Amino acid sequence: MKRVTLKDIAAQAGVSIALVSNYLNRHPSARMTEETREKIDKALNDLNYHCSDIARSLRTGRSYIIGYFTENLRNEVNQNEMIEIYDAAARENYRVIVGFSSNRKNSMENIRTFIARGCDAVIISGSFSQEMVDQLAELPIPTVILNTDLRAAYPGKMLRYDYRTALRSAIDYLKGQGHTGIYYMCGKQMYEDQRYDEFVKNVSEKNVFSIDYGNISFDEWNSFMKAHPDCTAMLHMNDFLALRTIQYAVPVGLSVPDDLSVVGFDNIHAADFSVPTLSTVSRPLALAAQYAVKAVLAELEKKPFELPEILPCEFIRRDSVK
Image (cartoon, rainbow, N blue to C red; front, side, top):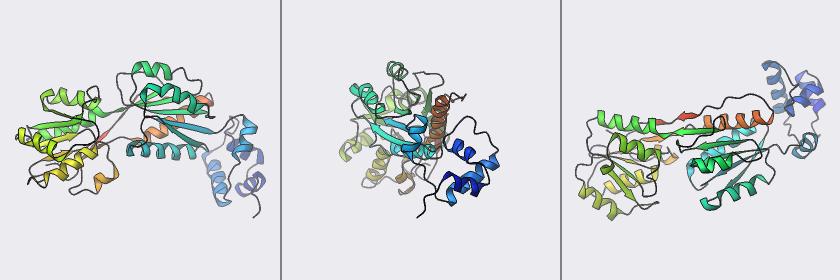
């Protein structure tokens, strides 16, 4: 198979070789109309052109790699966030490498080791305190933080997911349906979380059902329900716990949503396949990825870009609430 050259692409698109080269290398002089960009993109696609990363790096001094680092890659939400960042970077002719750390004590050390692998920029996702954000601000490459802790600030470099508005929407909906016994199941270590704060503010700290992080046994769940016969609606810190509630309701004769309304958090794929389908809260992962990638690339190219501080989440009402 004949190797596709810049000359071939230029001829196919009806433009100069220099313009194609500048476009592929994101050179500041590559000014063109949207119609011309579309012609070049079509030519690249029609000719199945793949740029040599090594050759491009030698020409420009960049790796054309964006790093994605997260605290927890075992979580489906972080996996989906990673995929969205991968797709957003690919649209800009960048590759993505992934790193994660399950040990918060060594997070900064792990992040520094990670970016030493040759990233041009890095996107870091997690729940970070101001102290941690201050350390991340000192990283030597363009950095964007996707944070779930609303108490931290890093203007222009941090995008925060706003859980509060969506959780409040779920609570308001349940109250509007006449529910008075509304409870929230969360891990014992989640007392500084947005969801916990918003629930306590809008319902009561007495209605928090705290468990050891991870899972809950049927006996533990059943004991709680027996001790709280007024419970007609339960919110959960994630969808897995919400699906457990739906599962455990069956053997004790509770119908979801007729006897018990159930709301999860994260909008994992299984939420739309459970019986009944699970009401939940969804983060705008695709939008966050687009903003984050554009922000780090703008900094690399010394171009202005305004990164929004907060992206609202969405309460998705399905069949598990009444």
